[in-house]
Length: 246
Image (cartoon, rainbow, N blue to C red):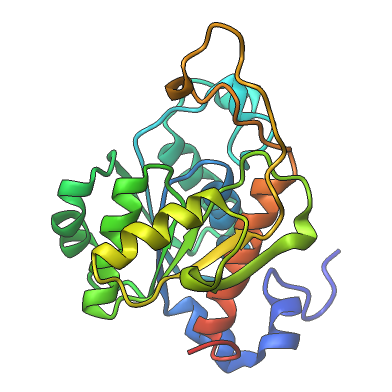
């Protein structure tokens, strides 16, 4: 039996207020990449009352995703990630609208893609892996004043207490941030809000006989990408509800 006032949003309303929840319901968030960080971010945004989500990915669920992705189960292996994410959101919040876009973002098509799909979007979450595309997204957002937060590297990290939200130019000990800073300066990117870890990466040897491009030395703890996704969602939700950074 459901108690009076016991709804899917009753606990949220206590800390965010009715007006804050209304702002979230009226908000649209685009999540680029529905992997370890992105899928957990989508889940938290849906549970947090965001009214419309645009999820973008071109991959399918694989067995190796099960250790960290909110959409990865033996029952979802082989299915498109965006389709599983849309079904997950519908099961959490049937009133939420989800636009699922099956597309792989390349640096050269980022401006056209965002221009075509980001109309009315209040916040963009970059949870993709391709550095050139991340830079293109950051440059587009910086030039046009689009609100963006970008996920930095989760690989070979173990200590969640080291995660920070900061401008990329104020980061330390993150190899991906180092590249983003260097290339960002070349492109004139003035600012980029990121979630990163100040932990020194664990030194993992490359598998014998493997090429570096196979990423065989990038390990991921089961709890790290989910924590990152939840932290990014928290930053987005607080801002959109009017109780965080503008």
